[in-house]
Image 1 (cartoon, helix red, strand yellow):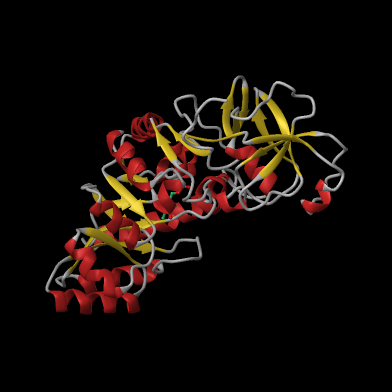
Image 2 (cartoon, helix red, strand yellow; image 1 turned 180 degrees about the vertical axis):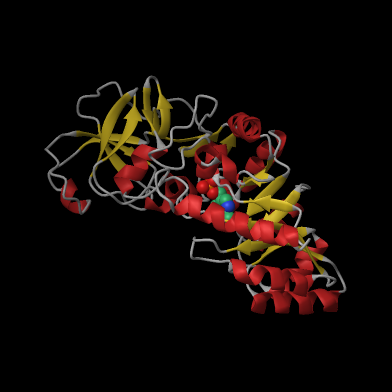
Length: 368
Ligand SMILES: *Cc1c(COP(=O)(O)O)cnc(C)c1O
């Protein structure tokens, strides 16, 4: 057995993130905001931000102010936008750390104005417009008045944006409709000479499917990690997945009759079947779902029984060459076999985003 530092870990190829961002810059010829919310879609927020900036991202987008503050504290100096809600009590921090916030509602903005005046600072903000996502945003008809209201206050509106509900569905009218509503509003604001200077809308799917949504800046998340936004969208060869999820076999045994009962599993273990243990469980974000597969010795092997919190079992009956210490791949490549985020998403009945962003914080991330 070789001596290994970790029994389970993520290999993260930062050069892939850098190259993916450059590719998007090349495709769009626009400013790029690298979206690194949710711990950089599981890849680690700080290294992902650094890699994205290296690839040409001039902005980083996060969901919460805490994520932005952590990046600032770690020395990230690019422009930062909180895409979601910021509690009014955090406005002084946003001003202090030059973090832009999103305005999507009059009531919350009134609170921001109060904190901004009290603090006597200038708050930079982007207005979010609701064009069909049905989540957060001012209705287009309310935006003009909202902008005039803020004119001359301590809140400086730098940008205006919207978010697409279904940009992966190329045949649906949903995104073209959202673009049309947004364009109509932009023209109206332009007429009244109050259009914020930075206009943005496109997430990863829209970057590929709707070039007329690129405006001044694009906001890719999933694609900068080299992962496709959905089944229908194949990223071109310029994109490379950055993340592989690995583990080592920590035990090999032959089972006894009762083992399946102890494991509370529906899997009918044959007596003296050869079984390997890997230290990965639902506490790591590996879903408690039956019929999964992993790669061992460049072959697909079955995960058997229930996944427990810290461990699961793999079927090694026909693999006498597998021993303690051998590498297992849960997501990524081994030899000419690959398990993609798509494959796992299909097994889990979810999307690629959830697969990578739900990988637990306790897994060591190894950057190269
Ligand atoms: C998460 C997010 C993105 C990035 O979306 P992807 O589909 O991962 O590219 C862009 N904009 C907003 C507002 C987001 O919340």
